[in-house]
Image (cartoon, rainbow, N blue to C red; front, side, top):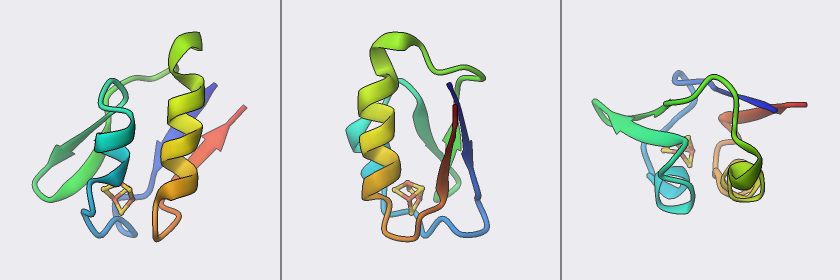
Length: 62
Ligand code: F3S
């Protein structure tokens, strides 16, 4: 599974970083994806982060 984050949409609420810090990090008030492929054990928390983003900036690619 891959994850894509539209930094144009991101409003920097940091919910994704709180939910899944292994995959997301903040960089200049915007979230940034740290990994190319999401490891198996982080898939659930990564999906949760995508669902919780208030502006739907996070896209999951199966
Ligand atoms: Fe940005 Fe959404 Fe994360 S607004 S900081 S991508 S939860």
